[in-house]
Image 1 (cartoon, rainbow, N blue to C red):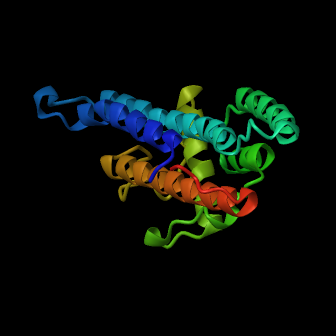
Image 2 (image 1 turned 120 degrees about the vertical axis):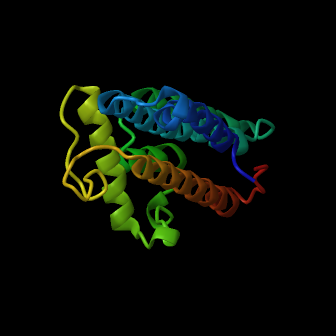
Length: 200
């Protein structure tokens, strides 16, 4: 069962589909290439935004799951940690691989490094790290008016650097996998470290 943060992530992705769907909407044909790319950029930006929101909400879910208000000594320390977690949430603004991993370690004690893989696509830790950082660089480039970086997944067979529908679907699947792996990993962490059954 997904965490509340994962449910919110899925709702955010569903809302973002509106942007992606404009690109293939037959009623808008012909959609000029530049306009199509603008919607593609907006969709990719939305995926990064819901990933960022997921991480932050997941940390809040962690503190809800690990709270023990009846144990006064534990509760006092837990509240100190929770408030430090809230400050860390405010500081996270670029959820690339390094920042996202450090954020989870510092706020929850959970290190996702061994979970952040994508078996279905035969992507190990290093491949996932590269792809997440590349997605963040692509988002950063058009957010600041620069050209999209040329990566294998952003370059078409003809050599044109752009975001295609295939790339957008693949990027969504990539984030969906990361969310599922992170959810599962944090749940295991809570159960083994705190000896508690997680409600999600």
